[in-house]
Amino acid sequence: MPNLTPTPHNAALPEDIAKTVLMPGDPLRAKFIAENFLSDAVCVNTVRNMLAFTGNYQDKRVTVMGGGMGMPSVGIYTYELFNFYGVEKIIRVGSAGTLSEKAALRSVVIGVGACTDSNYAHQFQLPGTFAPIADFDLARAAAETGERLGIKTVAGNILSSDVFYSDDSESTRKWQKMGVLAVEMEAAALYMNAARAGKKALCLLTISDSPTSGEALSAEERQNSFTDMMKLALEIA
Ligand SMILES: O=P(O)(O)O[C@H]1O[C@H](CO)[C@@H](O)[C@H]1O
Ligand SMILES: O=c1cc[nH]c(=O)[nH]1
Image (cartoon, rainbow, N blue to C red; front, side, top):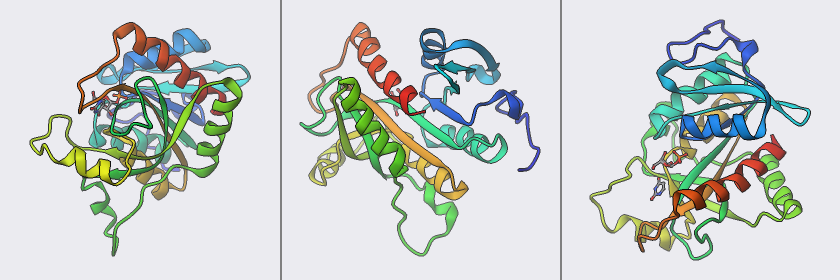
């Protein structure tokens, strides 16, 4: 592993970062997880306020770090974690808009595959289209652990979009026709970086809103339903 740490984006040293990282988009969600679920948590990065904490969940050493919004941001942090910090597993814990009746508000979605409208795969110069997928063992563990804990999950395809505010009013409908469950903005880059590095990744999402109906969870409801996803991610970490 090249000794390229600290990086311009992460002040931590490799020994500060656990082999498993939970990655919400929002750095304050990382702080919430550290304060509410980890013991002996230490803040190991504050560069750009992209907070990272390393601590213990039961007998496991875990890092939780924000990844920001969109594939360029998550692409940088996950690339560095996999390739410079020796991280083996990254589990994204994000929010998403529902595209399917199967994924109601508050549902926890397991992103088995991540479709995308992004050009992120272009860098790999493949002679075809790459299918970004979750690590099978992590996805299976999430489904089984959800059953054990009484946390209902729905597993399937998600969409990682480059745009939150789209000028194309038809695009959502087209992804819906293909059975895509939910839209977020990072999983495809995470899955591609994991594949290229030979590492493991999973994206768990809590449905926070519906882009078509305009329904959205209140701040308090978001907090509670996100807690289920956090517990699930920590159990399989
Ligand atoms: O809540 P997070 O994890 O940031 O995830 C979703 O929320 C952001 C958009 O509001 C995007 O990053 C999207 O992927
Ligand atoms: O990326 C996202 C996240 C939540 N809701 C959306 O509609 N899109």
